[in-house]
Length: 348
Image (cartoon, rainbow, N blue to C red):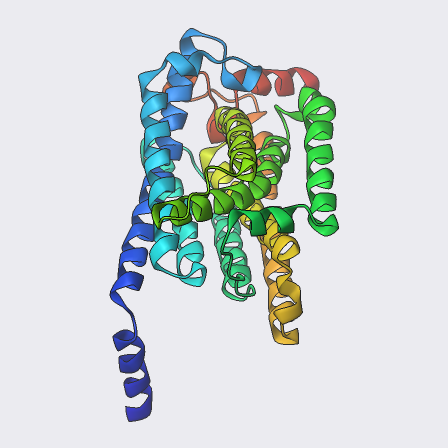
């Protein structure tokens, strides 16, 4: 017992001031990002009441101050998250991103009156546990010292193949699946956001390195690779923002948030492993643990989908909807009323 107490004491003493700063920044990031989902959803609902909804291809939310407040909140959270990596290792910062799911779900229940079935709650827990397991056992990132080094890694055949595969999948989803399934299948919009996000993180890492080196006296802005990564980041962020808005406007926030976090985290880890060749430093134990993490994530995602199916069935019954849901144009579980009406018609 004394030995165990001593080990905990050693661990506590070993936490540096930089790690504490990183921990505080990561926690702040989760709070801001989790809250931003709710504020943006409120803005999307308000904008949709007076214009074309984002889920139907409208952009009236760009004139809604509440939506911009949500965007600013998310940007503050992302900046805090980016800064956290400058002080603490990824193994400390990344798992804390799962807290944004819990914050988003709680706020959605309190503010948006969005309900989540008990199995949906279990699905959220499994998603968080699975993604955290993967992150905690992911291989350590290699040291990068210049933008040119990142560019060399990004232009190697393995990552070029991954990037081409991602871009192809994104175009297929956008032009083939979104027109038919965008309003009924949550994975369509989130799939685009997550795939594009896995490429944007790699470019953000390059820009972070460029900024750090430039501030230390080694100007990286003279290299065209820096501006190429900047262009990729801008394109990816705009794409993510567009389709995440569509997902939030169409589906339940408490379901969008965990699925997006899980897919984004998983694909980012895959992209990082391919780009930085971290698999050669993995032990069999790490590989098995990561596989168990992916199985856990799949189980959680399945439960979240079954929860959505239960909501679809229950809302298709001929019962009177609560007054507050009729007023804002959304039914139970955040399903658009026109979708519920079509379900009733198909049964009749």
